[in-house]
Image (cartoon, rainbow, N blue to C red; front, side):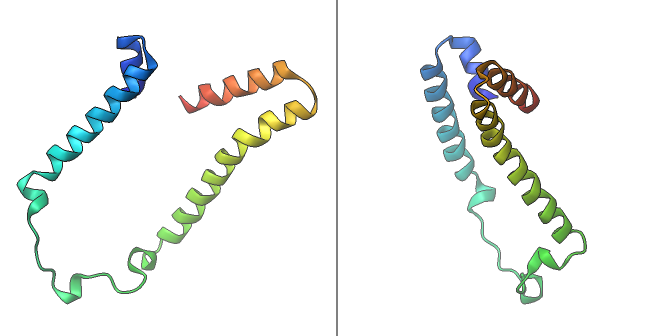
Length: 106
């Protein structure tokens, strides 16, 4: 969102990318200097992760499977949909499908 807002504001994509990179660097440096980030606390042994950690909870494996499946599906759609329209030699369909994917992602 930061890059798109900067593109609208500056009307130059290169300036927007550089501005977003600078903003990210400055905010990361600022947050890393906060006192809360620089404090370290010793944790009791019973409060540390042992082996599987969050994987022991009931819903986490199901959540992990759903996230992986959705990630694979959306990642593959960006490759399969345009490739299918190229195989049919329908360039207009490819453009419409890419626009639909972009609209759904926004």
